[in-house]
Each structure stands twice: as C-alpha cells, then as structure tokens.
Amino acid sequence: MSSKPEHIINIEDIGAFLQPKEFLLNNSEHELVAACKAGQKVAQRRVYELFAGKMLNVCRRYAKDVEQAQDFMHDGFIKVFLNIDKFREQSSLETWITRIMINNSISAIKKEVRRGIKVSMDDVQVRDGDVKDFELIEKQPITAKQVFEKLNELPLGYRTVLSLYVLDGYTHKEIGDKLGISEGTSKSQLAKAKRLLAKLLTEAYL
Image 1 (cartoon, rainbow, N blue to C red):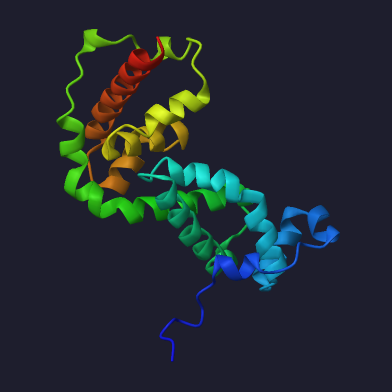
Image 2: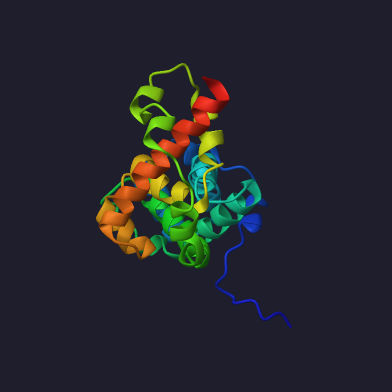
C-alpha cells in the first residue's frame, strides 16, 4: 500500500490528459482560475502549458543546473494547484505563480544558503579596478543568453541576491528577511555580485 498522500498532485498526471479544448484556449484568466479551483485537470494542464517555459527560466536562476530547476518547477506547480483557492486575483496569475516559484526555490536551497552564502560571497575577491562598471558592460554587444550563462557561473549566494534584486524586484529588506542576512549585507553582496558578473563577461566576451 502506497504511503503517498492522497492530495498530492503529479505534473505527470496532468500531462497525460488530452490537449485542452479550444474553448479553454480562449477563456479569460478568471475563467481559467475558476476551472482550476474546481479541480478541472484540463484547466491545470492549460496553466502548466502557459507558464512552464517562463517558470523554468525563473527557477533556473536559483538552481545549480537545469535538472534541479526542473525539480523546483515541478514542486512549484504542485504548490500552485494545491493552493489555487488562495489566489484572490489581486495580481496577475503569472505574478502569483512566479512568487510561488521563487519562494519554493529559495526554500529548497535554504540549507545551502545558511551554510555557504556568506563564505561563498566574501571569499571571492574582486578589486574595483579589475573590471568596468556593470552599467557600462550592459551597453556592450553582449546577448541576454551570454549574461544568463555567466549568471549561472556565480556562486550560489551571489546568484541568489542578484536574481532576487535585479531580476525579480525584491528590496534589500525583503532579501534580508528571506535569506537571514542584514539589509546592509544584501546591498554589499549585490555590489560584489555585479562586479564579479561584469568580470566574467569582460573576460569571456570583451
């Protein structure tokens, strides 16, 4: 007898259903959410189809590799569908799902962050004169793909703070609360992360 909780939702089960009918493709977001709240798996599949690509990219910023990012996303969607009744539509569905993906990813790496965030950041020595300012680097002919590749080469702590602040719009206070560091530490580590990213981009492409 399986010990697996009955309420667990498997993304694989959602994927096993037939493609959504055409009316689901044309439904409003409100109608799609209502269908998900009613437990309609075809609606859950449609939500997954709409946002899986974007959410994998979100999770990739916090994961060590694509496989881990897929795990983060899988668990994130399970939380989305288990908690869809809590969605009050005060923001877009995409914004709400993104928050869940970020929080889930942060929770998943929290043990690593607790063990290594300060060490992994503070041990990296980047002198101010070694690289150009990050803002200047942004004006150079470097593609988004190249930036993303180098972002994934940053140590876990750097990548986490930089992603939270620059890409996901969290304040330093919010970052500090999430990671258990001070607001000042978040600010200084963001500056170091930017310099290190600029150094990696300079060495690779400029």
